[in-house]
Image 1 (spheres, rainbow, N blue to C red):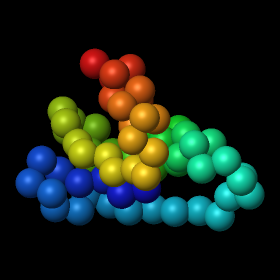
Image 2: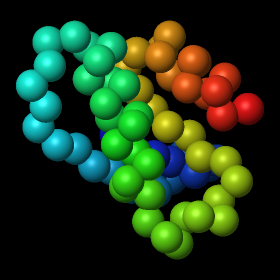
Image 3: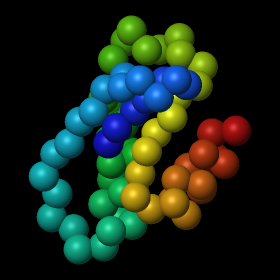
Image 4: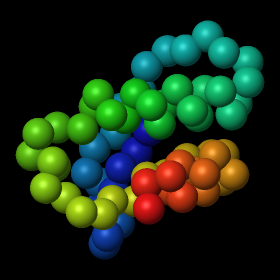
Length: 66
């Protein structure tokens, strides 16, 4: 998972090993894990760019945050 600010600068990146053969499932696990990875210094950030490989899942997650 990679998070960037509005200028494209890296905020943070993290990863962990997963055993899952469904790419969408892996992407979903990464998005859900993101909640636990956000450092306290970013709690006031209003917008961030989150990159992912599954565009349909990213669209659904973004829609859920609006």
